[in-house]
Structures are given as structure tokens and as C-alpha cells.
Image (cartoon, rainbow, N blue to C red; front, side, top):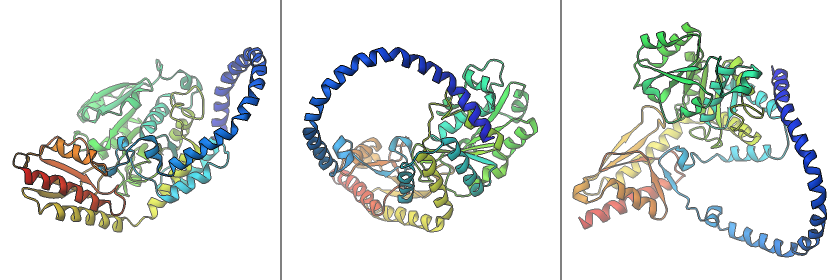
Length: 435
């Protein structure tokens, strides 16, 4: 299959190379004309080398104070979670080291994907696997695999999909902000709500059935039933489980359940590269996914390039995650929650509550509640003070309830939970004293 991927990839690139050759011939005259000016300018550039070297030393000294400080960007304490807008996770040192090592040599990306895919498959119990440029990219690649397959003509045409299987069935409650990654392939999304509607919607144009794990409780058709319907209809099924690790068993559970394709983010609970994703599933679909994306040119997912560093980095992150002491890690999170709660419960009108989200970021969190009228402190102003103070702290976004702030502790570095407790206490005490 690797040979087939190479052949199709080279055929796709041949046309591009012919166009580039023609452009190169046209540029030869311009290049020759410009060469005299280039050589004339070399001497003056060489003369300024000393000044450039001095500037480089100055830049290096500035960066020693901190890269983000040099750029004028304020780092933050992540008391929110693995949100992409807050740069997801921080990578483990072993992951960074693996990426640095990978960056020092050239390899064939297709050969690397095959080798890493085999290793990931053996770890996670799937037929095949590939690394993508984030979970959204995994959705695009997976959809393209189901729509275009390994057909080179269809791959070139996408997202123009007339005459192809180009319908993807969603439960209406499973529509979400990232389904654009699926629509990018040129498919029509068919919304249904009940099993009867789903079975009636399946036809000869149906390419894929999509399930959003985060929305499991919202839809009428649950995971296991959804898979059974897909199997009965002979239609590939894809589940998006982007932020759904932990629990660790989710890495293998959905393949065992019967989903044909499973997508995870690499830059969340796995603590891999932020711009990496993991696509597991049927061997034929993963092989088709590789054909529909980078490094092959003229493909719908060519823009979702994943480099050798991310591929190796995510493999390392998965290997480390499978060996991690998850019980000990959970206990550490519980201790952080308790510490913050103990500090804040002493303040007038303040109450705290430990909770674990049902799906996504499924780890211990702390809800901080207070009487907004009595303290004259709104949730918005609380968040603003934490964000604009020093150090900057970001808490869980999307909370609309007044007098409630939610704190995630699992992306905190050691000791940062104490800083979060102190800063929150300062804001609440100041409001209590002035009320």
C-alpha cells in the first residue's frame, strides 16, 4: 500500500513540477539580468556583517529575558484547561527532546507516517493510525477518505464532489463549531434526530456517519447504538473525541466499540505538540486518508501539513501517556482543588464545589460561587482582574452564570495552584471589604 501511496503522490506532484519548470525557464532571463546587481551589492552587505553580528548579539541578550517578553506577549497561568485559544497544553520535556532530535535529519514523511502508524496501532489496538495537524485536520482527512477513497481523480476534484458519495449524516444536536472541517471536503450534512430518521436518511450518496462524543448526552442515539446502525448500513462511522482524554481508556474504547475512525487532539490531555492530532481506524480508510492530505499535492487536506517533528512528538506523547501513573496524577489534581477551596471558603459569602465535567476535560475542577450583589463583584469583573493582574490568570471560558467562576487545575505547573488561590482570594477579599 505504501508503494501505491508513493506512486499516486508522485503522479500528483509531476503535473505541479512541469508547471514549475515552465515558470523556471521564464525566470532565467530575469535571474541573469539581476545577477550583476546582486554581485555588486554583495560587497556592501559583507561590509555590514559586523554590525549585523552585533545586532544579533543584542537580540540574543533581549531574548534571554524571555521570548514572550521580547515579543510583548504576556504569558498566563492556565487555570482553564486544554483550550486551543489558550495554547492547549505544555509539552513534556521528553516530547520536546524527541521533536528536537527529529528536526536534525531529513526523512520521507510517507515512510515516517507508516512507521509511526504501526507503532501507534500496536499501542492502541487499531488496524491503522496516522498523525494529523490537529483534530480538525483529522476530521477533514477522515471525511476525504470516505468521500474520495484512494481514487486519484476524485482526490484531485475535491471539494467538487458531484457524482461521489457526498452526504454525511449528523444528529442535529451534534452540529458544532468544527463541522466546517468536514464540510471543507464538499459534502452535504444531513441532519437527523431519531434512529428511524437516520435509517431512512442512508442512501447511495451517504459517505459517512458522524458522532460528536461531547454531545453524547444531547442526542437521542447514543454511541453504541450509532455504531450498530452504521455497521448494519455498511457506512463508515467517525467519532470526534478531541478533548476526551483522560480517561486513558478512551484511547482504545471507541475502536473496541466499533467506530471505523476515531479522532483525538494531540495537544490536550496527551500533552503532545499543540498542532498535532491522532486519527485511528480501519486500515483502508487510514491509507486513503494519507493519499488525501500532505505531503501529496493537489489534495483537499494539503493545507493541513504535519511535520516530522509533530509526528515524532505525538508518538512520544502517546507512549508516555500509556505509561503514566494516572491515579497519582488524579490525586495531585484533587489536592490542588482542595487547597484552593480551603483558601477561598474562609471569605464571606463564598462557597466552593468540586466537580468533574461529564465529557471533555474530564478531571477535577473547582467552582467558586459568591453572592454577586452582596460583594458587588460580577463574574466578568472577577475574570478581568485575574486577567489584567500579575501574573495573568485565565479561568474556564464560556461560563454565563453570575456569581460563578470555574477553575481547572490540571494544566497548572507545580505550585501555581497556590498563586491561583492567592490571587482569587485577593479579589474576593477586596470586594468583601469594600461592599
